[in-house]
Image (cartoon, rainbow, N blue to C red; front, side, top):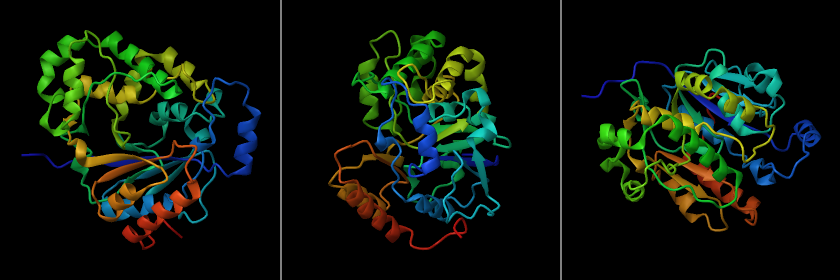
Length: 333
């Protein structure tokens, strides 16, 4: 029998308004290197944040608090007087020596400093959405985060992201013995709930060290105490990453915290089909269909294609959200 999650669960969502002129001016002041990830697609806005809030109210009304993390800009339509919303500026929780920052890795690594944040929280990027009813037990069971696990090689495709995944893996191999971990906990690391992801894990087993990890790019359930663990174990690496104003190849990411939780056997296996990652393209029928028919409980609509007709894609995708979530919620004015 599965216990009902009685602890308060918070949501944390990061948002940036790439059209904010003041933000743009400040960002330009600190651009001085070609070694940073400053592509415009990292900051352009799909203009569908309202659907994120509507989905939360409709599909996860049990959430305790929503921590809305922002540089300082707030959508005009957002009802910040809603008792569940806590607006958190970067300067409210990130140490001043790391500010200003335009690096999501810096923001992510310091989230545990947010005043009042629960031990149990779910991290959302603003391109991740809930699209069907979910319970607290979809995120945490028996006090443990729900996750799917998979081991797979890190693909060396040249982006800063692939380097950060390698940096994470180096730290993980420093503290965790792969053979011992699998021997002790193989039933949870190779589980039928992960489906075909298990194939990648099986193919990775011959290697003595962890060679990389599967990532669904979906919302992540975190225990705040594991942030504290990472900072205590790898302060220098957390500190150096936090001093990078833009993403660099030297960064680490909070994916490492997710892996710490899993490799410590502090997680509950979850079906990989809970959610789906989609990449915006010039043919978004699969995204539109997934939203309208609620094919998954969560989706990520990732914008990484510089050659896509962005305005057309935005219009089509948002029209499908309007069908799923046509009514204003209490988080809107």
